[in-house]
Image 1 (cartoon, rainbow, N blue to C red):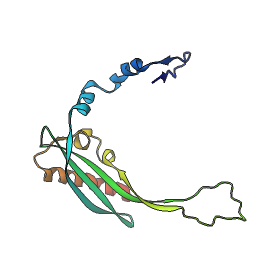
Image 2 (cartoon, helix red, strand yellow):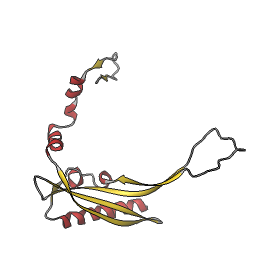
Image 3 (cartoon, rainbow, N blue to C red):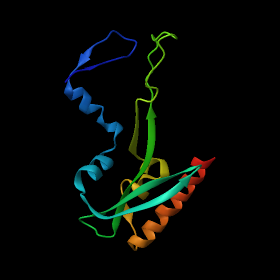
Image 4 (cartoon, rainbow, N blue to C red):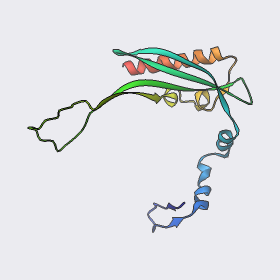
Length: 151
């Protein structure tokens, strides 16, 4: 693996060792946290939220740490429908476009990072007294998300 230096000085290629030395950008604590903890799926919930004029399912996955059952984390998914339209710039006006809609797909989009600015709440996980309290907290975050989407 080679990385090219993009600075204003002459371009030089450096090896993998130099890339590893750049790793302090991710703190040693975070690397240890990522590499040392396993989470297992505990529960899956689905709730329907109303956004403007449509209703969409929201999927909530709650995981627990294998080392500490009270440490919970979550992943939250928003299912939305996307319409894909062709963008053929070279079609003449006379020919027209026979099929205006190329496809209409339901796509699950992870919104975990959108819900909270605090990574310990959802991404890394933290200790909670119960799953019900954690789920209640996630519901509060979803209510805020719903309000923002409806504006």
